[in-house]
Length: 431
Image: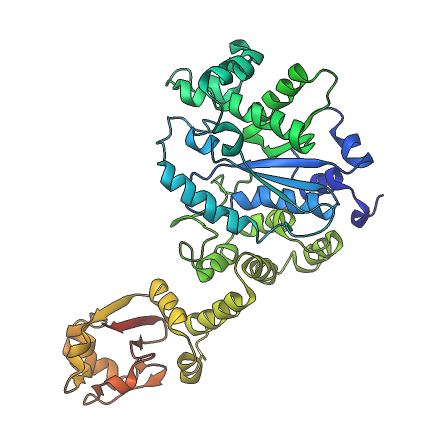
């Protein structure tokens, strides 16, 4: 049996479960020469999501094997909207929004691939650059003439929308994607297009387009299966929505928790899809922790958080988790948290806002617990909680009903953490 550490690109994709459809000859092509391959990304969202990370991983693995990845940013195709996988017409974004999204996603992309040095450094192309000066007559004559309506109608992305309707704009998307491939073939010596399995129709339109325009040319395609969770739901989403790779949209803590809260059945698959550890190490982790899923998840969550965000963000996540989940966390640990970390906690537990002017002259704890917040229902409930040793302020027990809340108690001059019993945690922000 072949050692997994000696696999070529296609063999590694198959081992990881990341190979779905491919055109004849693609395995031999990758096994015998160094090639250039591309994946397209349309900037229709303000940030990349971890759904995009599947395709970024394909390019990372490609580059690891000495091949050259080409990232095609859809400055033009994003203006049209890909109908693949959609049951209704997309709402078009403004040009300003698309340009902003593209610039931001380009910066994100540069975090995951080597664009700087080496014989196979990644190449970034914006397809707006080769469409912006093409007028409609040139497009119809030079591009549209080379592909038939019958061929286009045979694609699932079109067939699935025939009953509900599709604009000419979205119908033309596959022609644009086909021409993308031809342009990269001619100008960047790109012989392979990669993508998700929902793109198979658009991708093979490209190989067919090259065959018709360049006699004797060889162009190939391969796709990855769409990654879904064990419950059948789309990967990259949580109950709160998309898991973004922008920390302003999904905090590093929420990002980390996505992996920690994954279904046990999904974790081995996620590890194979996303880990950059050696294949032997991935297999070893599986063999060692298949019966210890919490450790398995922590290993994956740590790698993903560090790679998508940073080690400092990961260490910050651990500090926040310690405060939220370790019953033995101390006041000293709480006092060491940064303002950003306290803000993260405020997003994860019940939080209240109190006017800071209420501290002028002191704020009695009974009023604080019952009236300024609703941590307890009444002053008498507050008194009982204090007498029962249930109340902690910033991890310090409080039993005195005469306690005055003052500025000196505030964490980073803004917050107080209140605990009522072992499980009920609150963060009060003074504004």
